[in-house]
Length: 71
Image (cartoon, rainbow, N blue to C red; front, side, top):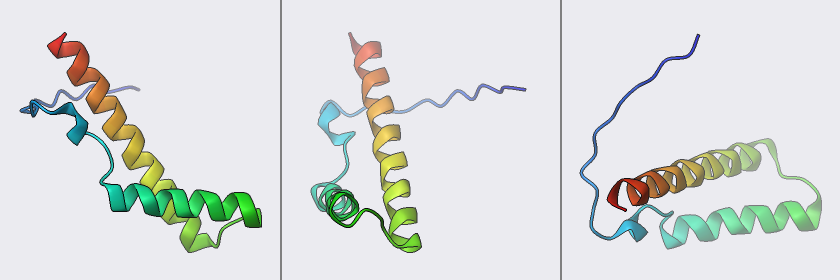
């Protein structure tokens, strides 16, 4: 069973704010680079990377929906 939740947000004029902060993005890149070099991450690093990817995807989705609503 699927449910729909509607959330209203005040969208900032600067949609670039719907991105990972620079330091957080840098950490994600470090983890992905390590995975590429070493072939795998520790369990803790993998959970951290997965959480950051989930956050990045959510922010991207919010940005795209905000752009569509504004356009």
